[in-house]
Length: 187
Image (cartoon, rainbow, N blue to C red; front, side, top):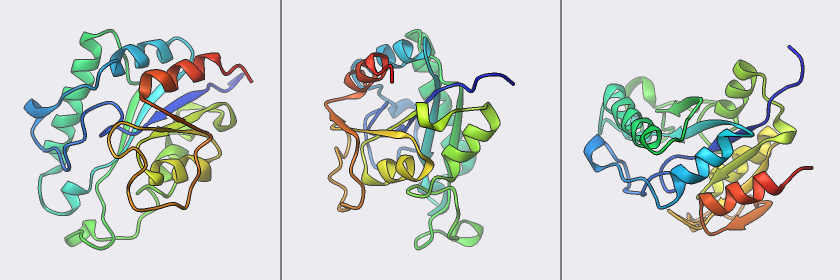
């Protein structure tokens, strides 16, 4: 297989698109300023993955198909601006508010690192050379548990999500500033 690749594991809502609290309508997707530009910059040196909890499905607020339609809209809008996502990993579960088969304590829901570990295995990623970027403590904790460097962006929740059990390696204004650090981080 040769040398493993480095990756950027990005949370979606509040990092790439506007945080709207359970987005279920693809027509309401809005890409944050400079997010596509940041991803296009990352595409030159990193594989880029979306790692996102989408508990609206588990709560019965939308179907998996609707959640995937929202994500497809995100991918389409990014592609229109020259940015590429290599793969998307979504967790639909919620251990407390989930209904039916979705009410489980899974290994994929952040802050657990399951989605990152799955992406790394499936795509041959070197986690030590990779970054996890998010707007919530759960994103940072997930990246830490997976063994990546972590960057908290101040868009979306900006870390103000009620949890303080993970400290990011970097705190930046937005995804573009995060990408600038990553491209400059040649460690």
